[in-house]
Length: 345
Image (cartoon, rainbow, N blue to C red; front, side):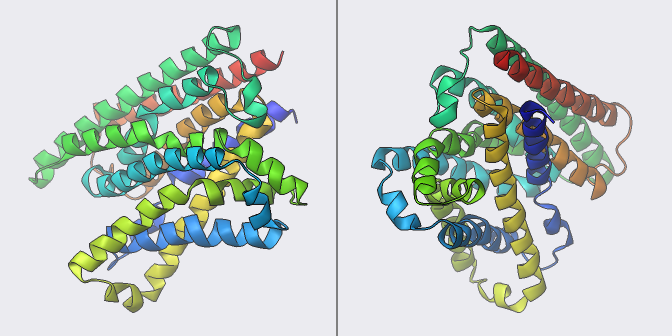
């Protein structure tokens, strides 16, 4: 198996895992957004990455001290933007559902996430990425255009679904506000990719010098690079629980704590696989990998949406628009993979 194919498979799996990460919410009964989000982010952003780093990266703290402070700050500034996007995404789920939230939130910012690393080169391996004016860059831009077409189709399908729900259930929608919130979050959501792209080089090198393996070193990038995002993602639901005086719900629902923890573990595995897949794809992996991961993430979110009944009772044009959107996103991922192959040749 070629590195390009392996990298493509890894980022695709990462995207599917990220897109379906909120599935446990569908079976929770008492937990509200603030409860499951607090537990999930605490597990996914603190417990899993830091435990893995400290256990499997020898002299991890000393290694971090050797990393230039500006590199760590840069990663965390991007992470703060992503943290805001993550909170917006969680709030949008109640308004427009898991499937549509995942689609709009992740795809609006794909043009930024894919193109910026080809203009302002990332760290380490990504510093050698092809530019936008290269043949590979042109192919990547075509892939981005196709993906944005898929996003338009997703939005049209969402409006159609919302109209059906209003006519059948006689309730106000909130889709437009959810769309706006998701769009803002989408612009900021690329921060999670940039945190890795612009910080992984010096952190991975420092960890390896101290004896860490490839996978633990990747965990170390996320552990330190997402601190800024962690603060936002944990503090906001904590504030909501304090405001609503609902901390007691956490201790009364141990089964739902476990379900929320599953979200956190799946989230961590998804971002680590995304980073690993980007590296396997080569110098252009920061752009190609993010684009392919986002396409797969949308598809994963739609799978959960369909399986959980978000589209039950919706037929005709909206459903076919969603099917066409999924096919368009698969095509976009294939075009981006070709761009990576062209860059390596």
